[in-house]
Image (cartoon, rainbow, N blue to C red; front, side, top):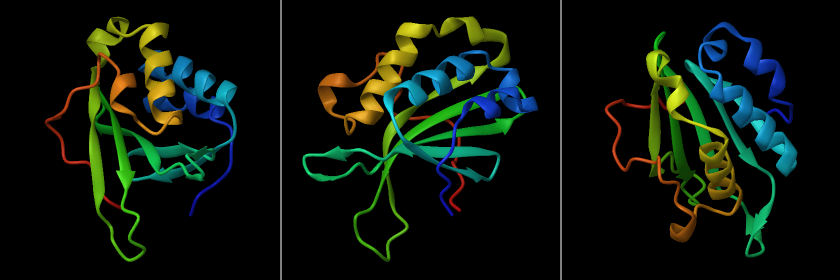
Amino acid sequence: MELQTTLQSLSRIHFFVKFPVLASLFAAIEEQGFIAARPCVDGVEFRFLNEIHGLPNRCYLRVYFPTESKCVLFFHKKSSVPFSHDRFSYGGVVMDIRSTERFDTEDVKEWVLFLKNGMPPDLRPKTLKKSIPYTIPED
């Protein structure tokens, strides 16, 4: 179930408060336009409701908390095959509560621009890692 919502209320939830950059991320996403969000296992997943080259944007960002002290931003596209549950990973950003100052507003702008524009290679954020040491649950 996808909800069309605002994200600012999420920034006050216990897990999200520990990572101040998430408040900046949610604000930047809402400034860019209409989004769809849904709660999921240990986090939230959202996407922009814009079109890329005349087709719906298939890019998703999952904010996932594998532990209380870690946050993973998982950038992916869902399969265009209707019955498939495949996800195509474009990488992730792993945050630790001890290193939340490592990310700034420039990083947030890169993440949002990458997501909204369909994750083109030329807009790949410098903080995005190709592999992450976590299994992101499907739901």
